[in-house]
Image 1 (cartoon, rainbow, N blue to C red):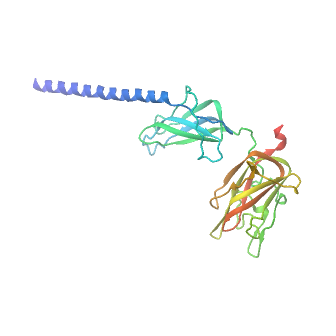
Image 2: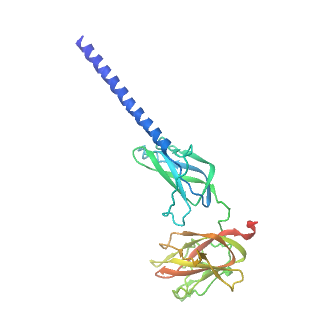
Image 3: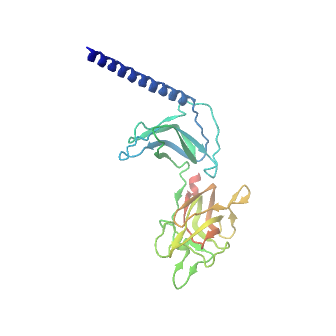
Length: 303
């Protein structure tokens, strides 16, 4: 009799504890929903149309259940990602995006209408255990005019690449035609005869092109890293009269590489319309050494 009474009390205690925990979790869930309703979407229009976004969490093997619950996004049009200009806009229905519910699935979110941006940031607002994220962005180039023009794949012939000078000795020749992105070999970049800001590398497209960007890369030779840290760009239609690339009425200094291997992309805004393009190194590490790709399209695509 006493044993049955004790078991009955333990059963009731367990049931009460279960429902108490359940109600506490329900209250937290309601609080989360209220927080979600208060969040706002922050956007700024810029350059690239992004249509979809996929969030990918940690793998099954780690299985720590570190999944993101909600995401916000911001965009900016500043030339440097760290200079984001933030602006609150009116609250919209989908200002907070639902993320993952486990550590192995893939969650898709679609922007409708698509957004236009150069930079995009994701801001985790709710997560399980820790904020962990892998992702892919889906979209397209806004004007479809940022394709490689042929330095790497040699669509631009060797004869189209010239320079003020190049280093040539009994050990190696660093000719202008070697200034190709990702080129391999013992000598695989352009190096001028002397390290001077008067040196330049020139590309002749043989017709007017719309140039929207440039990718630069240094090189490593005999354990020595060599790369260009800053450079100028000038353009010409006839190969004689040159116009420097300007920003706010002043000659623009482009930020180049920080090591000898990692490519760095610089956008040209507005794009240049030119047949000839010159790159003028202004500062460098150890020696001037340059590999590059030029991005753009044929000028007739403007029509």
